[in-house]
Length: 183
Image 1 (cartoon, helix red, strand yellow):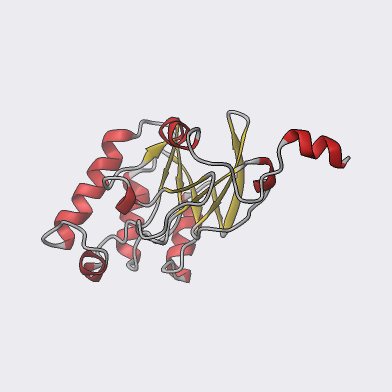
Image 2 (cartoon, rainbow, N blue to C red):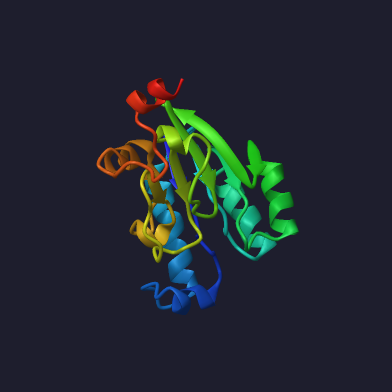
């Protein structure tokens, strides 16, 4: 199964105030977030993590060791320093700033940041992002996979698919009839 999430900011006390997370302290926040992930995922599931895990090396290493049974693809966020990225490279299948994937014949672009257009967006491909902590509405076939938008839980591909099937077309979408006329 494929899972998507972002913006844990583990052990980052200011994030509680900054985005008004409902936790009394970072210990409670971290344990709720990690327990929610643990309750969802199973051995050999694929996790696409879209950045901003933690500032602390010890916390990053602990996270990757705790979830070593997952196949993790790490998309770098703006709070991921070189030490965190180096740790991620030791544990993850891939580490990149941007990643294009295909699941169930859907083209999906993964980036820590929301985009106006992305690879194949004119064909109604999807884009998943984090960074905005639920403060940026998606445009077209986009979705904020950050935990602040999703009850502090990861989302399965199927959950996002159900949401995006009802979403409007991308701004630059070219319907197939028009594409055929252009040829």
